Image (cartoon, rainbow, N blue to C red; front, side):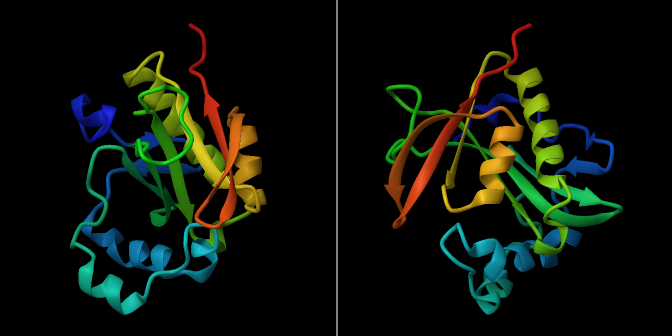
Length: 180
């Protein structure tokens, strides 16, 4: 469950200078499969999943749930953003009981290096601050993932701790909501 379970979903599409964040649709299925089957995308999230398995198990409309936005550029899906509740059993929390909202994102390799992740995540974080004012957001990434470390810094996440998980050093940060 996520704090977003009580938020009207889906929101109207969110438009940035170059992107649109929206709810997933059936036409996005092939790109979801491409994202999760990509060895490059899977490098820091446990590896690529077998394409055959994804073809067999992916729903007709993948990712249709509160907290998941697809990122569209010029009418084509280039990635996704999630705002989910961080699993209480995992290391890394800012509250004793856990339950923080965690930002996650995946971008197709051909769209890397153009600032799309930061632009899309900033828009999703702005939306989140509007619907749940005062709520901090956390982010966890491998320290070896230099691109994600730069995105986290650009978005204003501040390091809370580092720990070992999934056989690698993880960076855990928080972004407190802007003061009003």
